Image (cartoon, rainbow, N blue to C red; front, side, top):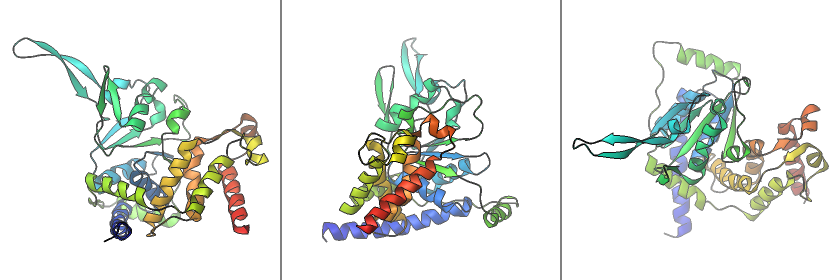
Length: 335
């Protein structure tokens, strides 16, 4: 069997398994299919996700369900203003042996897991938030001068409340850039909310079941990176990312007037991975330009910012992204 045939067979088998995983997740996390797909995309790409939504919309429930379905060892950290870096990473303690000798022993923190839920991440101080930076990028932490690797796979799904800003600390740009996607969790529609009422207010609730193992997820991540990406899709990714940089010659006047800083190369890398994940979740063997347009908002929103003047005039970052994506798509269609 050729490498191409092997790749096709592997992708088709993975697509069937992903359909089972999605069905198990949505059985417990009802509705919100786009949220589920984005969270699955983050895991398939080996990345991290930032879930932003009001309290009570099921963010914690989603992460717990994902850990069960994907077969991942998970921990949860409730971020508070008094949380210290050692509470996340762990620390060394002086231990006395039975023979009276003393030695330092490392006590691992909750970050040593496969799926970490950082609940209300913006409530911790910047010093504590920075404890995640090395782990999210390098998959290792340095404690007492010693590098300690994290067991693969390692993912962070962080939650953030968009309305209660008192006593919170905005995430630094360097940390935001390490999140593969921003996942906005909105209110459910009426039919979905009715289904939630029926499913969660009875004597028993639906349970999720494991579909993947950690090893199978790692294999899926490797397979995803082997999925081919056409030249036209790659050019669309480059066009889109560069179009949001105010100092780039291809940027529109609207972007130059409104954007304070634009996305870096990591945004292009994120798009390159997430378009593959979207294609895979939809049962296709390769991504197309529609996938790039669909993934632009979750990949780019947290990697750029409007200027003060643009915010003061009521401009919307989501609107600017949508307009620019539509403009680039029209240019390609005309070509």
